[in-house]
Each structure stands twice: as C-alpha cells, then as structure tokens.
Length: 226
Ligand SMILES: Nc1ccn([C@@H]2O[C@H](COP(=O)(O)OP(=O)(O)OP(=O)(O)O)[C@@H](O)[C@H]2O)c(=O)n1
Ligand SMILES: C[C@](O)(CO)[C@H](O)COP(=O)(O)O
Image 1: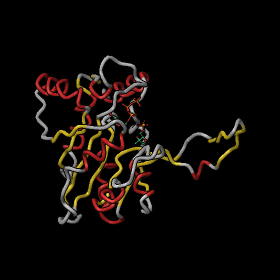
Image 2: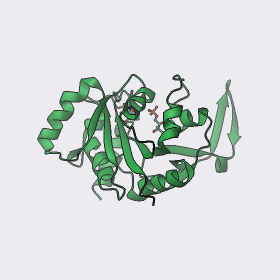
Image 3: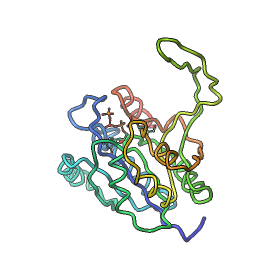
Image 4: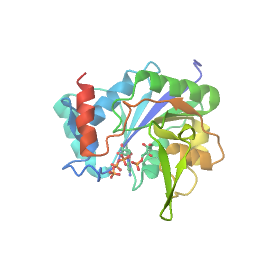
C-alpha cells in the first residue's frame, strides 16, 4: 500500500431515523451496551490504515453526542461536522474538512456497525489502485421491476445491493460534490458516477446491513453479541 496516501473516514450520522421511530435517532441507540455510532467509530479506528475520522452530526444532536462521550468515556479522536437536510449535504460538509489531494476517503453510514475490517481495507486498497470502490453484495433473491402497474423479471446476476463504505480518491469526490443535489443521489457512487467516473464494486457481506427498522436493531444486537 502506498505511503503517499492519507486515509480518512467520513461517518455520516446526521439523519433523524424516521423509519425507526425511536425517541432518539437510531445511531445513538444502544446495541450490546454501547451506542451504535460508537461501535462504528471503533471499527474504523481499529482499521490497519488508521483513517482520521470525521463525524457528521445533526446540529440538534451535538449535546446528546457530548453527553454520550462523557457517559461512556469514549476516547477515539474524531472531528465533528454538522450535517444537512439530505445525506448528500452531510457528506459534502464532511468533505470540506479534507484538504489533502492525496487523501483516500471512505464514506460510511453510522448505522452499519457490523462492517468488517476486510471490507474496509479492501475498499481502501481498491480506491488507491482504481480510483474508487464501493461495498456491494449480489442479490440472493429473484428480482422484479414494477413499472406502471406491470412487473417484469430482471436477471439477478446483473443486480447488486449497495452498501458502505464507499471509498474514493479525493479529486473524484471533490469534483462530484460540486454538482447540484438531485433526488437520484441516494449514495456517493451515484454522485461520482454522474460526474463521469466508472464505479468499482468491492465484495461486501450480509452482516454489513443498514439498521433502518426496529427489527434490524434486534438482529444487530444478536450479531454484536456473538
Ligand atoms: N441528512 C442526513 C440523512 C442521513 N444521514 C446518515 O446517512 C446514513 C444512512 O441513512 P438512513 O439509514 O436513511 O438514515 P436516516 O436518514 O436517519 O433514516 P430515515 O431515512 O429512516 O429517516 C445514516 O447513518 C444517517 O445518519 C446523514 O448523515 N444526513
Ligand atoms: C448509502 C446507502 O446506505 C447505500 O445503500 C443508502 O443508499 C442510504 O440510503 P437511505 O435512503 O439514506 O436509507
């Protein structure tokens, strides 16, 4: 691995978790005795590329986060940035803190605490050699597309389910995030692709799911306990 690169992780935790319907945003809920966000930060902190951590939070959650840091004596160094209305703006705000042209930047959802070290490292390494890498898994189910009330089968060999980390060389991300926001920008790969770059897939895994609904939290707790 090149020593000319500096490694960063932008952990996006600026969402409100509306689909979880919990009292506090889901990234702060406890799983196996620790807030989900702390599990996620710890995992990146332990990665062999030792990325500097930028944490994107909603303005309204700043006090909650500082209270949790106190409560859990959380020591992992990180820089806090405030997020925006959509995930796109949260990432954009995090990105503004990174100045080095040679940075390799992994963007990761706070609510994917079960990401593996292999996935993180593989994404960093592929981004160094190929420009970018996003974690994804092939569909294990059959796929149908619904258009105007009519459904049709798609070839599942052509379908991948996209996860994070999504990891990029800094110049690609910087150029891509100068675009205006569009509704189709649901992840970073779609932003970078729209700026003209081809996207490389890296093998993710089923454990690296996004905690979205209440049942996901139960599964995450079970897996974190193993
Ligand atoms: N404006 C936003 C929206 C989302 N996120 C983050 O992006 C990740 C993936 O988003 P999602 O699971 O959709 O989280 P929420 O937007 O919080 O959930 P919901 O869509 O149910 O409201 C989460 O870690 C979330 O905190 C963010 O940083 N800023
Ligand atoms: C970035 C992401 O996790 C990739 O699957 C996903 O697109 C986030 O989507 P959401 O609309 O914020 O749930």
